[in-house]
Image 1 (tube, rainbow, N blue to C red):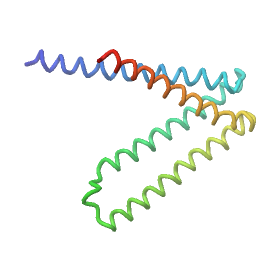
Image 2 (cartoon, helix red, strand yellow; image 1 turned 90 degrees about the horizontal axis):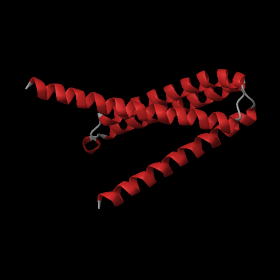
Image 3 (spheres, rainbow, N blue to C red; image 1 turned 120 degrees about the vertical axis):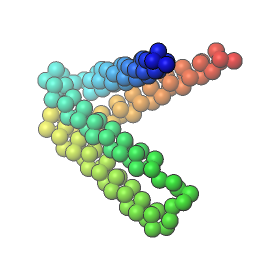
Image 4 (cartoon, rainbow, N blue to C red; image 1 turned 90 degrees about the vertical axis):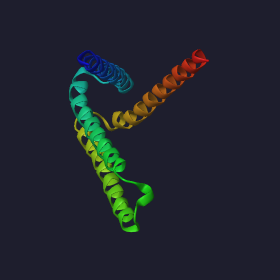
Amino acid sequence: MKKSILLIVFVSLAINLHAQDKHEKIKALKTAYITEQLNLTKAEAEKFWPIYNNFEEEKRALKKEAHESRKKVDIESLTEAQAKDMLEDMKALNNRRNEIYNSLIIDLQKVISAKKIVQLKKAEDDFNKKMFEEYRKRHHSDRKEGH
């Protein structure tokens, strides 16, 4: 019995570490991609990345909070009053998301040019598109190999 529990714990840890490793690799790729696309100098990068990483962490926390609150709701048994409350929560969440993004812009204006801030959005979109295409390509080839 102890061996089974130990094995389950070990496998769970291995899966979690693998997921963390993937997350770190993606973060490193994104960092390199954005740095290159914005042509950040060393001095700019030193100021840019703490601001951007803080923004990403706030965004991730907000997304997690939204997911957790939605997970608790049984949509089918929702009353009209509860639905209205949920809509208010959704609007507040959208406002917080906008506040986080606006704060990013304000903070970045102190360390990089307006043009680079505009380029940042395109770089993020392009990076996400490339990641999605890579995922789709790998997922599609995995399916072909599985058949």
